Length: 315
Image 1 (tube, one colour):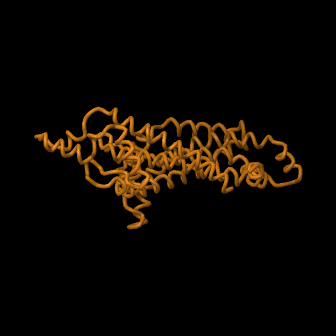
Image 2 (cartoon, rainbow, N blue to C red):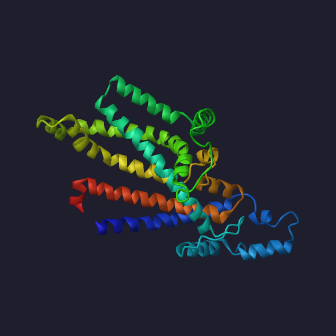
Image 3 (cartoon, rainbow, N blue to C red):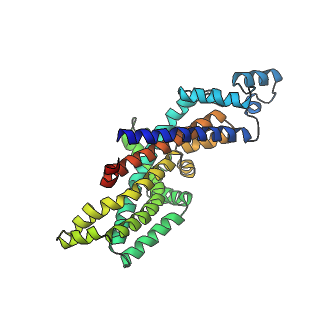
């Protein structure tokens, strides 16, 4: 198992290197000059030269990249051009918010999508299957911003059950934190649940027609045992990969949802950084997101091996 993990990590290294080159190169293609915005209205040439020298923007682009990459490898992602804060501090401030939102969103996605997918597969071509498919299509079709606004109007404005916006750290006030996160998590989880439902249904249909399932039924096992102990465990393998990708997508930040509910997560951070041409922040957030995707895929690969005896035997 350790050898397998080591091989996967070796594959991840060139992937991250390519991503870093891609991200750094694209940043240089963005229009505008952040130094001009920082210098103020008068834009004294001496101040401009000082700022460019401070942030090493006078160096050749390959030298800038090597300097930035060296800092990344040592945990230094640079300094924000707008706030003059270390990018690592900004990420450390926003990352827990995004992780909490992602975890709660995946909870709603699993709680809704996986049972619906199992039920739709077991009750194939029945009214339950058709209703589940319609709900899944609705979840994919309804825009997140519209659903978020409707929830705010209904639950916050009309009923007064939950706060309409804002965020409170779970370490400061756990109850308030959960209250502020329920609606945005449901909005994101609802869309993900539709995708999970379709994949779970498809995987379950493939497993339910397998020979070993017919053998399990012939041995007299109850339908519950056949579905949960035999079918679902094997159907879970493709769902794991999808879950890893969806969770990585959430770590990148849900821009519209965070804007609607005023959640200070990765999405808002990167949007503000792009508009302000804050190169260091954009590069840092994108690299952290790429690392998150790779880590989630590595976890998915490990779970694949743990759940599939044939893969374990081949290692």
